[in-house]
Image (cartoon, rainbow, N blue to C red; front, side, top):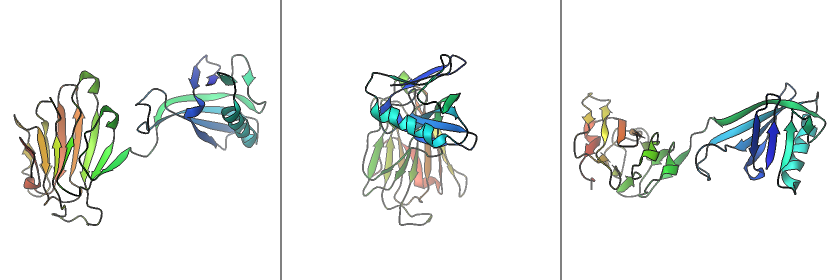
Length: 248
């Protein structure tokens, strides 16, 4: 474990396994990155990062970076204090202080997956964008709703990798099911052609994206811990509809 304590008595600890590298800046500082400790699950779906910024002696970025690398790779004790402004402890003399500690930041990449078959999604899929290019009629099943799913969200985009944005370019049906034990969807799907659109009513626990829909048809799905809310955009009303059953 790596420990950092700054002069304001803010303390931070993360594991060497979560270390993601260093980046030097032009203002005599060194950014140290870790997989975020406070968000998501313990897997590749965690997209956030934590960052500790250290101040360094003039033009001593590389030496500081080498010291951090040695600390991460060679530590044989349960923990290593990398920087402690309160007690003046540092792993190398070229590190002079902690500039800042940033927690649970996110980068510019969205978590995304390509769907070609029929998945049952889980809580860990929250925040993902799913590009759906099915090889046959496919059903995406959402997780069983619990209060722990408040804030759960995904985006589904119909895609055909070898087809331009034509109005009827999809080859196969995509069904999105509210999931086992869940109530009906709530929401609206907008139609960009004539504005008719579709609104969810009682009994609608599916969304059907037909095999005549256009690539780029999109659905944003959110959970409030009780129901799923769906907001979509498509070209023609009949190409993406709420329904009481799966399309075939």
